[in-house]
Amino acid sequence: MPEKTFSEAYEDTLEQLEGLLDECDADIDYDTVSNILTIDFENGSKLIINKQSAADQLWLAAHSGGFHYNYDAGSGCWLNDRTGEEFFAELSSLATEQAGEEISFVKEPLNKSG
Image 1 (cartoon, helix red, strand yellow):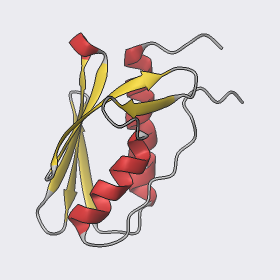
Image 2 (tube, rainbow, N blue to C red):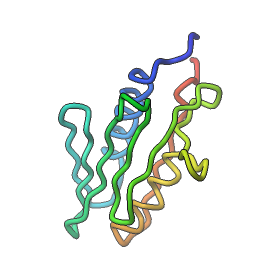
Image 3 (cartoon, rainbow, N blue to C red):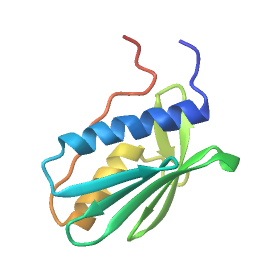
Image 4 (cartoon, helix red, strand yellow):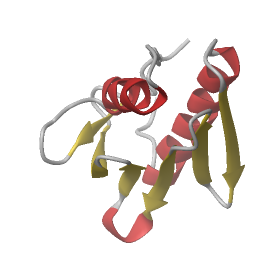
């Protein structure tokens, strides 16, 4: 399989995340408009995920700050540009922190064939 482009990887990630949010037991609402996904928690806090095309990065805005991720084609994962933490793992931690309850997003690598 050829390597995914930045835009393809971002769109696939949003699609995966929307599926995971639909399956989540927590009281979470979300909306995607113009490739920006906003996650709304019952307590009024939000997480916002968007793409920064000029930098080829996925950006995540949380109550605790902003996080930037680079796509690693070898692993099929988005990795934090400062810490190396995987996007879905960090998103799970931030969502748990903001929602006040355990939230876990488990996903398949984007480069998985099958």
